[in-house]
Length: 89
Image (cartoon, rainbow, N blue to C red):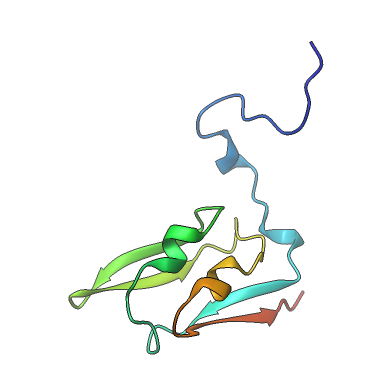
């Protein structure tokens, strides 16, 4: 059988493949501008945005080990609390 495209063969195996090293731009979240809507967290295709309870609201962070820099989070943020900045290598 010929395999076409990428296949995840076992649950959790993608955690071994840190894909963040090939991005050009990375998102930076300004939690002071954030209205805690969770849109970035919901729309992130790589599930690399985490949220943690902080003083009665959520604080959002990006796990750069897995962020590919697609910019979906920044495009979906209704208050422009996420800026895509050039990755310094």
